[in-house]
Length: 485
Ligand code: ADP
Image (tube, rainbow, N blue to C red):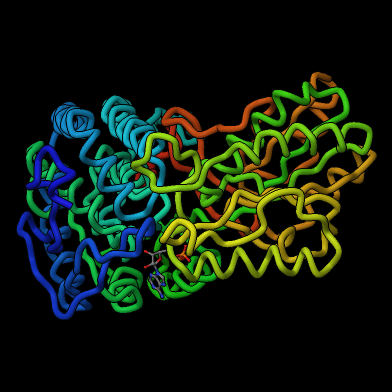
């Protein structure tokens, strides 16, 4: 790993608690999914380490909350600058531990850094309001205060951005953090901790604990010192954490699974729609919660869309994320390859047509690879339609009327991201109002940005990350009434 880094001291394998590097017991191997070789072994600090981190964050909160927002902003801007200066090393760590194409990894670092910059700016704009009151001789106002210690549990698909998207607004608001990164991708999280330390973020404000998920998650969700839990990951684990957090009535912010419809109407620019599907579906090998999961086309243009997609998908090149020609990296691990293959096999057995791809490329490419795949003629009842694919598999469905399209789009417990391609402004309004999703891209395959609210409805989650909403999530609203004025 260190050979790939300009600054080898960014390669950290211990947890980061109260400003110190802390080793753990045993060890969980981190694999490079492009060749399944071990690139690090990370000790487990377990429940004790999590408690130590919560205690440190609780102590640090007492001073961090009183630091002027301008000073917090300045420290975050320093962290932002260090993240950008180390873009290549962070991107290398991302590609090494989760496989994404290195250019995409660089994009992730820029995206992740943008949340730090935005949050630093927002730190200065956390205001209360003055209120009218019905009581004679009184004045009322609100103040916004940091909620306290925040526990956050993050996934492997955006090892840098999933952390900055939660931590930067929390730190801006004056909260302190205990982060449990995904076991697949601890290296990016620990490198971010090293950079936070260099930026001068005080000890105990930003802690990263690695180890057994249920033990650490148990501490973060049950400790009365932790006031909020932020989680991005599967709906099943999100439900578990939410139920665990109920015992102390913690605030939860959950960003869970999706099942994004990608709707292509018959008036759409088909070439642009096909480009959009490729960007939305095959970025990060389809392993994002906002990846198009069901491509719903009106019958009049469906065959044309399939042809446009076939031309593009057959040109995608699976391979090592460091290879300049690679456009689709590996999946996170071999289990993911087996799961995606099962979904495709079921679709094939159910009579769908595999237009291109449809098989693992493990032997051919020597890692956790799956061929970029296009499926046509699928039935919406198939597993490939009902579950989140999380792989490079695009599947086309047909629906004729707007009512049927809305019904099909909403026929899922999820409601994170959706995409609509049409030139008709009336359709834009009817469809965006009719579908139940937290984020909708119209003629746009990617919607995320530091300035906008990211989050879902239904079983896709609670709360929003990004924009002014992202910082507000980490504050409590306090109301004061002054009488006898
Ligand atoms: P995925 O299947 O994509 O890995 P998960 O929801 O299992 O999604 O994982 C997301 C994050 O949740 C990871 O950091 C993982 O370690 C953590 N996690 C998984 N199970 C638990 C649990 N029981 N308690 C706390 N955290 C958990």
